[in-house]
Length: 441
Image 1 (cartoon, rainbow, N blue to C red):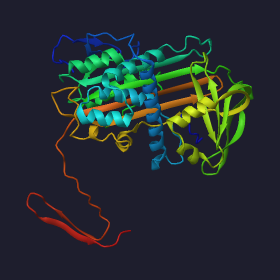
Image 2: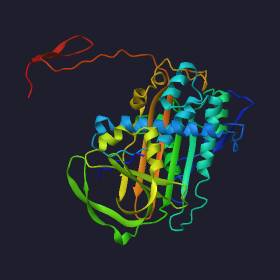
Image 3: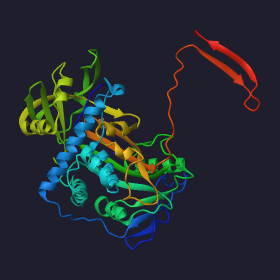
Image 4: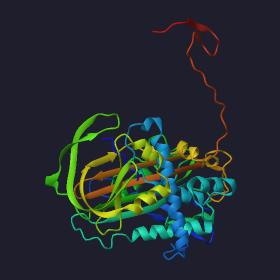
């Protein structure tokens, strides 16, 4: 179903501001039949999480506006990628924003400035990170008014950072992670066991997302050059304020982007919802139990998907939301299930203007002064399930930061015309076979 829903250091230089400890059950779960939990040493700031950050209403709004702009920037670039043409798209812009915000805490100079511009971080660092802290704490409080016992409200946002044992992490970076993101640094060995480190990170993500996000970091994505992986994971599960009745679900045609149609399981109900109609689209908002979160669906008129998508700016989205009015709505909504492989955001972020961070000229001296670092890759993966009772969604983002390697010459060599070959003994130079090919097949 092609439905688009628009709208992640073992012995560190000893300093008074952080300490080294250990943490268990990252990775394998303990059981009578399975392996024992993995114990991983951690480096953490001695400063506690700031649970009451002083953040103005203006700063909170500015952060939210920036996050919306990033969400729509990412949506616009991702939907235009050739490999996603005509395919489903679902991701967590908030997860991406938080993971890169943590990374930016260690960026300096032009690297930090370029990241801020691309990510729409308009606040200075001393206000940006507390604003993220306040937003995270606000999200953690959601669900207090939820009443459903059949599908309890859950919204969990967690951060963790995995660093190379022995890397001297700057105390100020550890402080920023601890006070604004509630994250310590788990110590692994990328240098000699990158596959083991990758497995540990993936296990942590799976554990934090109720096993909905598995294999966030694909095989081969973590090399011996990695020094730090900053991870955000988001898990959400909630019931509808007004659930659909399962007996009303029935097959109904869904008209796909290429003009074809197929019957899919479609939920059906008539209820009071907030509804809006605008140029080329209709919109409806489905509140979740507790009425603190909702799903807003924008439905373009037939043949006008690209036109509506092209108009989706932060202001336009805010305008759609502001035009929603209470109405009686007969709603038919396909049941959804989305699960795809993790994908890289490196080229997408560079296309949005975050280029310097991916080059040997990057300045992440705020993380460490031991080695010259750059972002090697950014991976993201998301999950969505929508049924009669509600919604389950999860996503995770991992930013892989590694040491700068010496540049390697690169040449294109396309054997697309007549060629000559020789099979020879390298030690003696003896030519065992020789030939030419002027036609193939």
